[in-house]
Image (cartoon, rainbow, N blue to C red; front, side, top):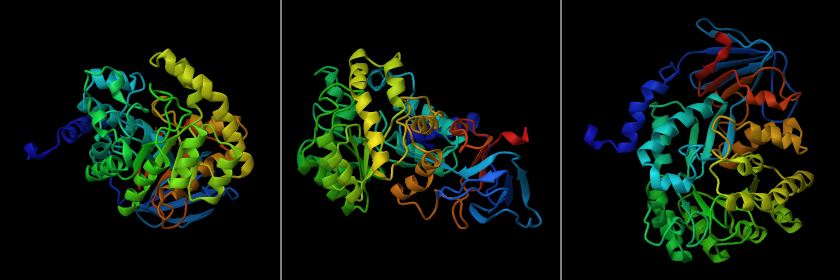
Length: 432
């Protein structure tokens, strides 16, 4: 049997013994959760006091006072606030916070990435993020194995939708041939130039288990090559990725910093503009009219320039973009755009994802808007509004509790005390 296991899956299974926590909890247990208040993710008034009844993996009741059937386990969370499980649309769970991706390609292995990915996934779900979209690992397809290991119960972690690897151009963001002409690393084999190569890359990623496609429409901050503000793929090339993904019933997420790259990606029909650092008025109008969402990653502007692992040349790129990133977010807020929530961890440490929401509030967003972004809006972006994102009867029992009221102090989201994912308790500090 062991001969049939993929090496990375075997590593994850072996790792599970030390990471289990609530791994073997019985998902058929019925629960009644009690809390001082409840924010349901839809943006309406809070419910206080609040109760939520859970059976198997589903929410079966929400109200100020619910009956407690025999055999129900009651968890009283006291003065805490219950919220839907949080969602992060831009993570790299198999990457370490203290290793630059270029160094990882030359000094680490896929098995190491898998093992650290298991730890990072545990830290992420315990921080209240029960669903993540993973935007491509340093080592291709390790995220596929991690997603599968979580789904199969081998390790704890959030629900994951994974890119498998990115689609990028020669000389563009993430081109590892920039080490040396004579150094070969696996990611180089996934570079694609021209529509035909891009179509093949899309098919290859889906063949190996990707849920969606990540295309790098512009340069990047944490990379050499073309500048972040420059469009690196032509309109035709981005359209080729979107057209092929649609044939598979899937979507494309576009890494896009620069204005022209953002507009090209919107025209092509991508699902999300990730980062979106340089929005102008026309780009905002295009987003309003299209089925494309703006998904900024803002808190990293505070962390990249202080990092000990980021080369000075890349810190300089970050400094050049920072003001534009923050201005674009404020423009999007003023325009009333629906905004997704994302972090780009591990540019900030895994498990600190909620700092993104605190930073957005510092920039002028209302706390309720930030919460709705990380719950209902993100679920809509993923196409999962029927199962996650709000606390409603029939939805999956993804529930998080924080001390106090996050509408009064958004930083309470950084101090999670209770996490349930699909009816399984992943964290319960209140019982200690």
